[in-house]
Length: 402
Image 1 (cartoon, rainbow, N blue to C red):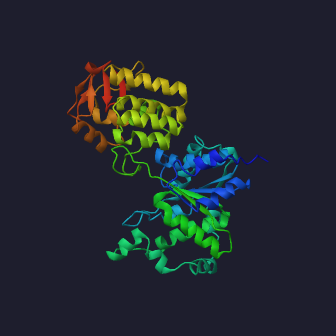
Image 2: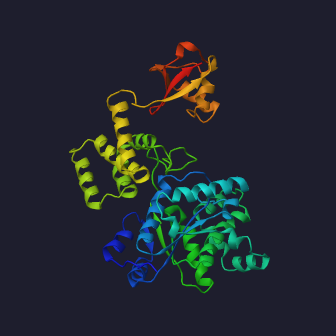
Image 3: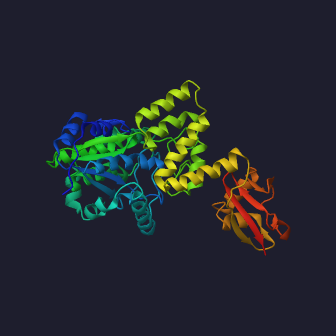
């Protein structure tokens, strides 16, 4: 049986860095110092196919508990995904298909393994217990919560106020997430600050099922590219854990300067002392923000791709952006003479769809040998053979016309 680490410095770091709020902090600290093995729960609904740096903030906190020897539980909400978390929404989510859920669950586990030691993780699915609840069980569950409690939730309150539809199924979502903690006998649950209502529901239900209430740790929401909204796949402002090294590095370099210190705090392994020095240097104009971002991009890329690939991504950035050159290695693509530019972009994953390809062309984001392409219906004949097709700032393809 692995030893539980009770080092006070590590425990205090766990309860402070990257932890927005701890409920109840002193109680949890005592439990961590006691040497008792705790059950630490993180639940994620598989509503997408990729995990991004925003998800990683919480998963990295889960890893801290794992490193202290506690039992971490990666709970995949395959049942609740069929309802959809109404948090922060003004309308109901579109139900997901079983095939989408199954595919996303597989991807989530693989990507969580980039941070967690999955051999030591208890992976669970909430369909194990929620799908087995009969009418009697559901009535018993609803008897332990009140309408007044649910109606105080901010997003529900807003929809009720505006006389917008709010289904009973959505109303039940926080109760089902709370019941997950009962089924798993969780000692601690982690989540983003936007999940606080749902996390506290777990505490309440555990009390009413005569269990010791879980402690709650909320983590800050990471701002996405652009610096305004939280990182979200639906907003397209995310950096996926599975991004290619050069793409990940490049996206981090595109962050606004005001996000640098926060990203160092939430997304890297640098010590708080070292981050403090960088913050002071930025405030006193002793360091160029671009140099700080290069360090940030290197540190984050190293976590998910290793030091060797991070150094290669850094060299690529220097070559392409700092020295205005071309990458040393450019993927060659085969293009049939007469193919339309729009089709070549989609086929070679330089655009997600034809509409996306048209948008990129219209915005001047597509170049051939540094000449901006304005016609998405352009036919690529043999005169384009050997030329470099560039999409955005980071994607290059050498065309071989046949």
